[in-house]
Amino acid sequence: MRIISYTFVIMAWSIFSVPTAVMADKEPSPFVQVGTNDEVKYANNLWQILEQEGIVGKNMRPMKPFVGAARPHGWILELVYQTINVNGHNGFIVVKRNYDQEGLSVEQVIQDRDKHLSSYTVMFQRENGYDEDNQNWFWAKYKPDGTLFTKQIDGAKVSVVGRFLKGKDQADNRGCIYCHASAGGGDYIFYPFIEIR
Ligand code: HEC
Image (cartoon, rainbow, N blue to C red; front, side, top):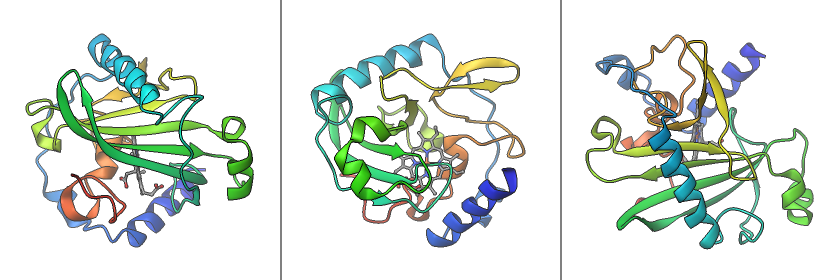
């Protein structure tokens, strides 16, 4: 499994032409707590806004599904990206809907999104000072019902939300920031056609 997912990552890296040297030069910052109550609260509020905007949830507007290129994300994907307002802060958001079943077709997804949806991976650019080292991106992985995924970190079950996983060693780091820091253009976004407005 490990080997397979690494292969996918390497594939992704070559597809998205990642400058690998960049990461090695970076000074490691101390590990920052993720999945805290505040982060979870923020994520719950964000979810409600995304629901109202028709970006997530039962009444989400359909986008154009396409076959994804890389692990760890879905097999079939849909993207929504725009500026939204959260508590008075205007920030850019990218929501990725992941339809994760291998072999799934675009047609099957179009016919029944609810049935095939596995997760939403979300990055939202928060206010200055949230995470200056990483362009203030807030990361979250939601289940289709809006609750957060969890992950074992240092023996504890932690919600996948916040500055994920800022300051963790590369060796055990499968966090959002670790991968996305290597995206071309230095904006943490892999898809070249997504431009922060
Ligand atoms: C192993 C590397 C890796 C990890 C870990 C990872 N991503 Fe990604 N992510 C990618 C790649 C590669 C793409 C572009 C290809 C794709 O969509 O699958 C991407 C695309 C995205 C996008 C679409 C915007 C973009 O960058 O083009 C979002 C949103 C996203 N990821 C969120 C997350 C969140 C949230 C997490 C953590 C829970 C996460 N990612 C963890 C590699 C990773």
